[in-house]
Image (cartoon, rainbow, N blue to C red; front, side, top):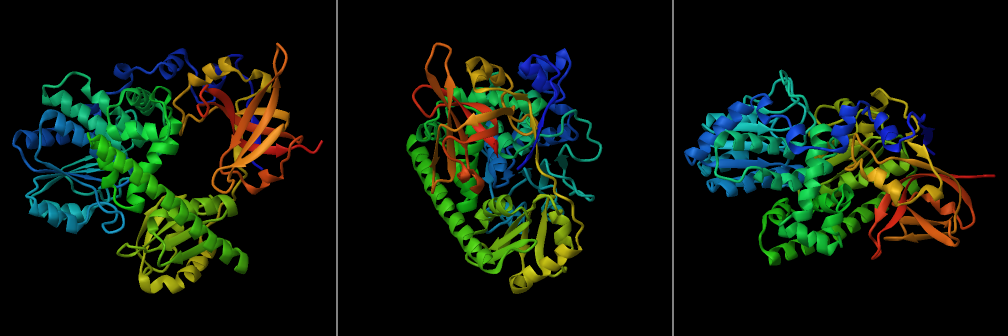
Length: 563
C-alpha cells in the first residue's frame, strides 16, 4: 500500500488550497495560473540563445529557395514538430523542403551518416533536426564537410562537447538565460516558428500560428514535460484549437473513439491520441502518423485511423504474449533481483511497454531485448528507482553494447548479437556492483478529505479551473473513508479494469450511484466484494461514457478496512 499523507488545510477555498501546494501563492501567480493569456504568458522567442542566428539562416534559405531537410524524431514529439514545420512551409508557399523521419527499427535514433549521404544526393543546403541531434557530433561534422549547414532544435541534455552545428536551439545548453526551460521538441519548434513569423514579414494573418497549438498540445502531453508556465498556456490554448481543428486525421479519431471535441481534455490526448501517434513507429513507420496529421483527404484519414487501430490491437496481443512467456519463465525459475529476458523474435518497439508493466508488478529493474525486423538487437530498460540504469549499464564490460543511454528510470540499448548468451549473467554481476537506493513507499499527497455527499457538479467546476493537468500539476486527490461497496464488476480485456459502485443518499430522498474506476487494477483489488468497507484515494472526473455526462471517481489507491 502507498503512504497516504493528508495535506494540512491552509485555506477554506479548495482552489487556493490546491494551488498553495503547487507553489502558487500570490494573487498575481493565481490569476496567471487560472486565466492563461496567450500574449501575456509567452516570452519572446528571440530571447532564446542562438534563435536570431537560426532564424536568419532559415529565412535566407527560404529567400534563396535552398533545399531544406526537416529531420524529425520518430516519436509523437518529433512527428508533431515535423508537422509544425510542414504546415508553416505550406502556409508561406515554400516548397523546396523534404521531411525525413527515420525508421525506428532500421535507422535508429538521430542523424546517421547514411542519412547525410542521402541528403547530399538531394542537394540539400540546410538540415534542421527536431527533437534530436544534440548528441550527433560526427554526423554533423560530416554534413559540414559536404557544405550542408545544420540547425539543431532539441530539448535533451547537452553533452560536454556539443556538436559544431551552425546554431543550437536547446534550453539546456550553457549560457541559456531564457526564463522557461521545459519545452518539448515541438514546443521549441513552435517558438522557432513564432520567431520566423516575427522576423520574416510573411503575408499571413497575424496569430495564424495558433492553429499549430493542437500539435504542441499532443507533443507536450506525450513527452511528459511539466505542464506549467508557458507549457500550461500552450496546452490550454491547444485544447481550444482541438475543438475547432480541421485536421481530417484528428476528426476521424474523434469519431472512432467517440470523443466530443467540445469536451476534449488532456486525458484524451494522453490515453487515446498520443499513444496511437507513437504506435506508428513502434509497429511500423512514423510516416503513418505524419500522414495522419497532414492529410486533407477524408478517405486517407479513414484508412490511416483504421490501420493504426489494427496495429494497436496487434501491439496489445504481442505485449501480452511476451509477458505470458516471461511470466511462465518466472514461475518456473523464480525471480532474481533484476528481470532480464529477451528473444530474437520479439519486436523492440513494444518492449518498453512490457518492461513498464513488469516493474509495476515485481518492483525491480527490468531489461528486455529483441530484434524482430530490426538490423540489430535493441532493448528497453525500466527501473523501480533502486538503481540508476545508465550507471548500471556503464558497469557492464565495454564490448557488450553497440550503444546505450537514457535516464535514471528509463533507458535503451543496442546489444551485440554474439553477447546475448552472456548478457543476463553479466548484467546480474554489474547489478551487484552498482550503488543501490532504498525505494520508499510512494507517497500520495491528499488535497482534501471528502464524503460521497460532497461529490457534485459544483465541486467538479472548482477542479475544472485547474485544468489542464499533467506533470507538475497533477489532478487533485481526495480521501473518501469508510465506503461500503454496493456493487463491483471487472471489465476490459480479460477483466483488467475494476468498477466499484457506492450509494449516495439524496437530500430529497432516494439514492444515487457514484462509480469509481480502477484501470489496470492489481491483484489485491480482487479480494474486494460487495458489502465490504474500504477507504480510497481518488480524483474526480467527468465521464461521457453514457449519453448524459456523469461524475465518477478515478481510484489511485485502496485500503481494505478491517473494522
